[in-house]
Structures are given as C-alpha cells and as structure tokens.
Length: 566
Ligand SMILES: *[C@@H]1O[C@H](CO)[C@@H](O)[C@H](O)[C@H]1NC(C)=O
Ligand SMILES: *[C@@H]1O[C@H](CO)[C@@H](O)[C@H](O)[C@H]1NC(C)=O
Ligand SMILES: *[C@@H]1O[C@H](CO)[C@@H](O)[C@H](O)[C@H]1NC(C)=O
Ligand SMILES: *[C@@H]1O[C@H](CO)[C@@H](O)[C@H](O)[C@H]1NC(C)=O
Ligand SMILES: *[C@@H]1O[C@H](CO)[C@@H](O)[C@H](O)[C@H]1NC(C)=O
Ligand SMILES: *[C@@H]1O[C@H](CO)[C@@H](O)[C@H](O)[C@H]1NC(C)=O
Ligand SMILES: *[C@@H]1O[C@H](CO)[C@@H](O)[C@H](O)[C@H]1NC(C)=O
Ligand SMILES: *[C@@H]1O[C@H](CO)[C@@H](O)[C@H](O)[C@H]1NC(C)=O
Ligand SMILES: *[C@@H]1O[C@H](CO)[C@@H](O)[C@H](O)[C@H]1NC(C)=O
Ligand SMILES: *[C@@H]1O[C@H](CO)[C@@H](O)[C@H](O)[C@H]1NC(C)=O
Ligand SMILES: *[C@@H]1O[C@H](CO)[C@@H](O)[C@H](O)[C@H]1NC(C)=O
Ligand SMILES: *[C@@H]1O[C@H](CO)[C@@H](O)[C@H](O)[C@H]1NC(C)=O
Picture 1 (cartoon, helix red, strand yellow):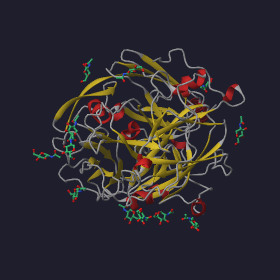
Picture 2: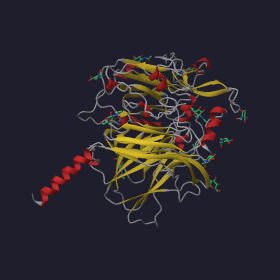
Picture 3: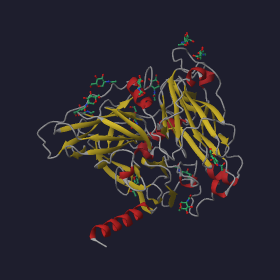
Picture 4: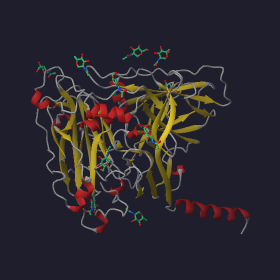
C-alpha cells in the first residue's frame, strides 16, 4: 500500500471513530465564587469557579453524564435547556417538576442521550433565580463534526452568552419580590460572556474581547441567559447570516440585528470583512411592555471585536441599537425566520389531535400576610395561563407523582380554554374578577404521540408584554404569529405548514398570539413556562403529562438510583 492510501485509510478509520457515539463526562462543583463587577465585589453561585460556567461540547448521538455536586448553600438543580430528554425525563432538571432539588452537600448524576438535535443549547440552574449566575453553553455538533452542518464550515466558533448582573444578592431579591411582595428589581447591567463592558463604570477590565482575522468566518452561538430581559444584539460594521435558532437549522437569513428572548439561542455566521479596526458588539434591552413598563437599565452591554494585529489606538465603533421599544424590528426578526428542510427531519404535522388555547399574562391577587411590601391597592402581581397561577408541589415532584400514581399532588384539569373576553384591550378597564387568578397545580394530560396545537394568547392585564414561552421535552413548529386577539379564520391564511421555524422557546408577540405544534412523542411530565424568571415565580406556567406509549421503548423508565428525594 502506498503512503497516500495508507493515509486515506487512517483518515477513514479516524472519521469512523469520530462518528461513533461516545460518553462525555463532566463534574460540576456548584459553590460560592467572589466576583468584582460595577465597582463592587460580590459572592455569586457558580459552577467550577467559572462564570459563565463551563461549555459542554458533544456530538449528536453522544451520552452526556454530569455529576452535579452541590457545595452551595442553596437547593440546586440543573436544566439542560432544549434537550429532548427522550425517555430520560428524570434528568430534565426543573425543581419540583421532574425532581426534588439536590440539597446542599448532596449530588446527583444527570445522564442522558443527546439524540436528533444539533446546534446551540445551554444549561442553567432551575431553582429560584439562581440561574442568574449558574449557566453555560451546551454545544451539539453533528456526528461527523462541524463540516457536516448545512452551511459553509466556519473557521471559528464563539459562544456569546448574554446575561444580567445585579449588585444585590439575587436570592435576597427573590425573597423580597415573592415572599414580601415587592416585585423584582431591575438588574444593574447586561453582560456579554459575564462582562458588562466599558460603557459601565469601573468596567474597562470587565469587557469581553473577540480577536478576529480578516476574511475568516465566525460562528457566533448567541444565547440569552438573562433572567428577565429580551435583548437586541448587533456588531458595528458587520452583518450576520442566521443559520439556526434553538438548535434547529434555519434557511440562511441575512440581518444586521439579532433579537433573542431569554431561553432562546441564535447561531449566526459573521465574516470578518470590515476594514481592520475595533468594533463594539452590543446587547441592549427589548422592552415590549405597553403602555408603561417597569424600570430598566438603559446602557448596552458591550464587547470588542478586535482585528489582528490589535491596534488599541482607535476607539471601537458603536453600532446604532434599536430603541428599547422597537417591536417592529423584533417582530420582523422573529417572524422572518423559516426552518431548513432536511431529509429525515420531521416536518410540521398537518393533522392535529389536540387543539388548545392558552392565555398568557399577568394578573393581580390580594396580598398575602407575609407580603409586607405588597402595596398596590393591596394587590400583588400574579401571573397565569388560562387564569390558573401555577403552584409548585412541595412534597414530591410532579414526575415522581406521575410515575408512582400518587394522588393529591396535582390535578388533571388545567383548562382547555380560557374565559372569553377582549384579551388585548389595554385601554379599557378589565374587570377585577378576570384579573384575579386561581391558584393551583394543574396539568393537561395528552396521549403518547398525539399532535398538539396550542394558540398562545397574550392578555393586557397589568400590561401587554412579549412572554418567551419555553416548552420542556420537545421542539415545536411555530406555525403563525400575530397581534391582537387571535381570530382562527383570519390566522389560518397565514399558517406556514411548509417550512416553519422550529424552537423550544417562543416570544409570544406583545398584545398578540402565536400558534405552535408539537408531537407528544416523549413520555413524562413537561413544564411549559414563561422564561422571564420573575413571571415564572408569579405563576406563569403549566405542565403536560404525556402518557406512556404501547411499548417499553415508548414508556418512561424508572428513576435512577441516586434520584434526589424531598
Ligand atoms: C457562600 O455564600 C453565602 C452567601 O454569601 C454565605 O452565606 C455562605 O456562608 C458561603 N458559604 C461558603 C462555604 O463560603
Ligand atoms: C442511550 O443510548 C444508549 C446507547 O445507544 C442506550 O443503550 C440507552 O438505552 C439510551 N438511553 C436512553 C435513556 O434512551
Ligand atoms: C430593590 O429596589 C428597592 C427600590 O429601589 C430598594 O429599596 C431595595 O433595597 C432593592 N432590593 C435589594 C435587595 O437591593
Ligand atoms: C458612574 O459613576 C459616576 C461618578 O461616580 C456616577 O455619577 C454615575 O451615576 C455612575 N453611573 C452608573 C451607571 O452607575
Ligand atoms: C449589511 O446588509 C445591508 C443590507 O443588505 C447592506 O446595506 C449593508 O451594506 C451591509 N453592511 C455590511 C457592513 O456589510
Ligand atoms: C436611554 O438613553 C438614551 C441616551 O442616553 C436616551 O436618549 C433615552 O431617552 C433613554 N431611554 C430611556 C427609556 O431611559
Ligand atoms: C419580514 O418581516 C417583514 C415585517 O414583518 C415583512 O414585511 C416581510 O414580508 C418579511 N419577510 C419575509 C421573507 O418573511
Ligand atoms: C406604598 O405606596 C405608597 C403610595 O403609593 C408609597 O408612597 C410608598 O412608598 C409605598 N411603599 C412601599 C413599601 O412600596
Ligand atoms: C377597548 O375597551 C374600551 C372600554 O371598554 C372600548 O371603549 C374600546 O373601544 C376598546 N378598544 C378596542 C380597540 O377594542
Ligand atoms: C407515532 O406517530 C408516528 C407518525 O406520526 C408513527 O410513525 C409512529 O409509528 C407512531 N408511534 C407509535 C408508537 O404509535
Ligand atoms: C375573523 O376574521 C374573519 C376573516 O378575516 C372576519 O370575517 C371576522 O369578522 C373576524 N372575526 C372577528 C371577531 O374579528
Ligand atoms: C430545599 O428543598 C427541600 C426539599 O424539597 C425543601 O424542604 C426546602 O424547603 C428547600 N429549601 C429552600 C430554601 O427552598
């Protein structure tokens, strides 16, 4: 055999092994970490002394095993945001939904297969508001590596994690907001890869820098890990080509601005084709609340794209950011994306078995005795879906109760439809009776493999707002989106039943609606909730109970031996 064919054989051998599914193992020590930001030092909760936490990299088909050791003073869980968890619902992570928390001093091994999805996802704590600092990227490459992505192979990959920073302790804020009823304080800064950037005081050293080489292509894996804010993202002097969202490929879409809701990810290709120099990348808030929103920080987080060789003498060019309330720009981005059709990939189901209509929005409830800071005419903010404000169970997780057939933990009567009213009219005074939410732990049960269509309708109580609704355990097709009250007759004309975008988190247009479809092919209990943490804690959530299929392969296996108990 000559040298060339030996080499070819060796390479074929290597790529054969590269394509073999492997086991990827990590250990997460969750504990205290002291960080300096915005002129002050503070103790945060973080993984392995890193903020943001470690990036997990796998190939599709791999098994991921993460031993989470809780050395923090708080109850902990980790959610693998967007991972299907096919038949591994026990590893999904939402506190009291699929597991009891990992108590301080305890550990739990999350073990699951990463099957049938490629792109950018992330992991984060799913207890209280600890995900403010407990988060990191989860990158899934095709089995054969990046070259097998359905777009030209980039030269470099760069995670861009957008977040928020509070000077105050987030757990203290949480207690103040929900136990004492004051509402959640706005953050003090937005961040890019944990750094606010030099538009903030004392932050020159806390500025993320991306060094680039002229002519090279960068795959930016943009993740919105912020607790409570949707964000615009731009880089001065550069355009993007969107190639995926929420680990689902899109048809290439050119844009100079990306909009990303908490929970969502956007993969873009950026070519370093500008004149050599320094350019700001910036993240600024998209505040969709009308007519009057809560206070928010009005300074962009920035990072600097530096062309090599670095020339510090020129100040970075700043992109012009959209106004904070630029709903048309947000809506254009959110609706212009379409899914990439690939052989072997599921397409949008045309036949629907279960049609549901859920209102999503805020409301008010009488202050509780503990809520000493609750003050607006003795009404505390609440949030609900179909007027039910979700209450977490306290003694056993929903999944365990489902698996064991335990009674009295949840009810199966989550309303199929809401009461009918003019959902989006913020000008009129909506009757208090409609604003007052019920409370409860109610789920909707669906048959294995049923095709579910949900209309998500925003309501105008307290204020209209774009709510990023996240569904655990599934991707869904975004069939249509619009403003106003949903009108089935009119909306059907705009249904995309050919190449809709596929997501795990949908920003329901402010004062509007979205229609999503998914196939319930994953047995277990799956949380659906607003990914603005403040709203989740106010109760903007429900859960689906998906029954087992006919075979062992389509049924939920028992929990692992180290499964945490309450
Ligand atoms: C971790 O930080 C918290 C909050 O600041 C503090 O109460 C606790 O004592 C710290 N624990 C350790 C082990 O340092
Ligand atoms: C994960 O994949 C492995 C290997 O294919 C398989 O043995 C195992 O049953 C899978 N686990 C689950 C939960 O599907
Ligand atoms: C939240 O903001 C209010 C009003 O500005 C302030 O009084 C309170 O101390 C803040 N909470 C924390 C935990 O910093
Ligand atoms: C930055 O520092 C200056 C001077 O101390 C102060 O006036 C200003 O309010 C600070 N800005 C922010 C956003 O904290
Ligand atoms: C970005 O795209 C727009 C629209 O195609 C174009 O006008 C603009 O020149 C492009 N900017 C850069 C920096 O390539
Ligand atoms: C945000 O800041 C800009 C410039 O500093 C100012 O023009 C604008 O009015 C501010 N917006 C809000 C909502 O504070
Ligand atoms: C993009 O969005 C704009 C504004 O919503 C709309 O006018 C346009 O038709 C959309 N283009 C595509 C290709 O969907
Ligand atoms: C309660 O409301 C009054 C009147 O709106 C206001 O002056 C006061 O500061 C509020 N108290 C708290 C604790 O928010
Ligand atoms: C909103 O409600 C008010 C008061 O009920 C009514 O006068 C107004 O016509 C409504 N607006 C719309 C757009 O329906
Ligand atoms: C689930 O539905 C798909 C098509 O929608 C079908 O191919 C598959 O056989 C079904 N599985 C079961 C177990 O019913
Ligand atoms: C719904 O849309 C249809 C078709 O556009 C229209 O005829 C009908 O009046 C609308 N219904 C309402 C309640 O607006
Ligand atoms: C931690 O979890 C345990 C078990 O579920 C629960 O009893 C306890 O109240 C939780 N602690 C906090 C501070 O939420």
